[in-house]
Image (cartoon, rainbow, N blue to C red; front, side, top):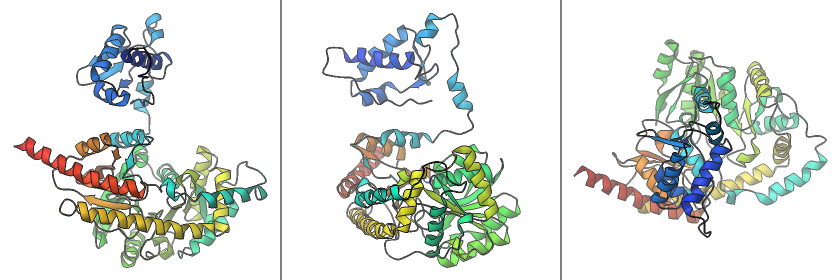
Length: 492
């Protein structure tokens, strides 16, 4: 278990810094927040977090070890050895929470993902990888108007229908027609964001030992939803011609796949768009192999140059595709409103599981989402959002052309949030990540989306302000050059 620290010593008091740090750590142990066995961050890390010299941390650790609260092991770091109450008690063993944590079914996030989540709240950071719209893009005035309208509609904020608020499902049904998807409200399930849709699929439709085919790289690799359910991920490379269809047939014939996951429109993290012909071929192959498809289409509305091809679901006449959409990317991730469209028996199954886990998405959020769609404000917002993202995309590309030519490779995305940046061979992404973080720049390394993508960064132009975007990219180019120079020196 890795701890999170949101405290700093007060440098304006007469109490020595090492004493403040010792008392802080001791209070965490005394209160049971840091239990026996908890790993304490390294001295170097704590010195950075507390903004003190490392010698100050050494003094605090020495006293805590002398008191019997901490112990250090070579190569294993420093851990909580006892708490105050266990030292005073004849009972030698406190509850072993850390053992239970390690045995839990849900696997922890990748270490780099944990580092990113811990760093994101820092207000000084330039977040060059964050996959959500900037606070600057939040439609505050329209949202205020939407919320003012709700009291006349809402009679209660109790639990809603099993599949979600019916008026919202009716509006989504209407909205999906603009993409060529015909779906009655009974074949739509409201979920708390697209992420929950994937979680419901992992525990509701697949058994342990199943396998999912997916693009490589893929957003799914940055999650542990399916792996925690005992489901393996099998990446298939995606190139200009789309999926390798022969690999799909081969995997299915070996009973090595239970379904196929695809993010065909403004793919996360590469920005790739599957052509209409490739979508048709993929659907035909999956139908012939009886291989269900999960189509993650959360970015489809965010086209910047021209509308993308219709969703695979729009071509589906046999119920092969489970279609996942969301308001998180275009409107607000905090609303936690997404949807799954599919055959009614599947939707009924997922709805039953959702009721067992959270008894439905927020009623207030569902009413707000219904008002956004029924009032037409969502269409207005989308036009504004596309214009803002187009400007950000173009600014990012301009900086890349000026500062990264000859240093990295990329493709100009036609929509979505991301640029898939390929760096020179041999560069250490871990060193680059750490150096950038020290300078206030937060990156998303490519290995989060494919263990083999050790030369890539996912650059997002959606979150940072325009000023931060330019400053962050320019500084990133300098950091890449510095890391490359250091590696050359180390080799000589």
